[in-house]
Length: 490
Image (cartoon, rainbow, N blue to C red; front, side, top):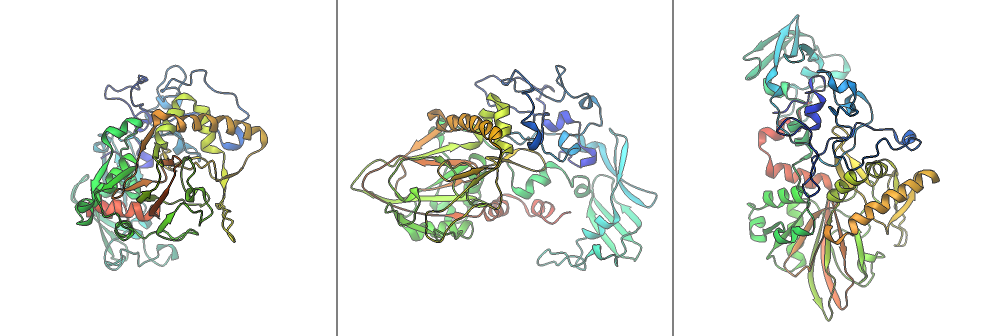
């Protein structure tokens, strides 16, 4: 299991990702890129006064940690840590890393001088595990409710003894660790859980991060899909959610073309989100709700709910019928793939869309004027590892840009490049929804659009909150042990 304890990270080289041959590679233009997070990051309020750092925006490994053409001297030190553990500003890059590492084998537990420590042979240094943390994370029935897993003690009050009096180690790397505190209380821990507390497996398990597969229009030849009967009997739910996490969307095939069946399907994943449009929706193109989705007009690629602080996690669409007309083909675009292309093509543009906040609004319905609690960038990133985890893009609903005019001009230039990638037909999967097919997609990643149409279409569907979506994914795709260590651990 890869090690991610902040004090014992593998060198920056390993964290940012090396090839099997042990070096960063320049990736051919026809291959899926392997990215090293850019070392150069300048805070939002300062960066725009700087000049572009490199004249080679196409070089994937520019600013790589061991790039002899201009890498940081710190990166050569064996104790070097990723830059975003040295700075409050996280690096921004498109894709999470899932490289294997044997670095954890160099780490073991020691009980020395009345303290439990993690010792690293490669770094030749130790870090103390605080007694307060150990007591706070005791899982016995006195300290944690066995039914709800909720904590029943409060070590912050200062009335609980957290001084260690003894430690029994079955093994320094495996087995059970028993800690006795000065008040006689005993707590048991897994040695592996302590050693890998900050491992990438554990950290990513909290939010259900998986290796994603980027796609273009070619996804049409192998579109992710599951059978409705498999999902309803329970066996196909894990596959459905795994495909949504991996590809960003999945089609449930051969289901009853009824709103009742569609609503039941959504409720089996999580509670349907209620908004100013209602909860589960069943509508025709009559502009009953004041939004262009309720018309027969062409819709550009977009994500929904950019006017909410937290947009919906999953959106579902099921076309129940289309009579007396034609058209209305649907489009899907992988926002993560477009962002990855932008990262390679123009790093400066990528950073601009990652830093400049944008407002959005919902104002068409009487008595409604919704904006998010703050201006949020188009590209949003994981706060710990810096990889892209959300695209917010809706040209129709976009409101103010939270920047001065000199920066606004840079934002427009970057947004134009991103829009061009999103509108590129080679990046878009076009298809015709049919009755009996429910499309579910990750609204934080995949943009959807529609061709104009004639006639009358009846659509139904709904939103599911991101947290409910990820919760269901974790429950259906992770073991009990994985859930425990990545949920209630400290």
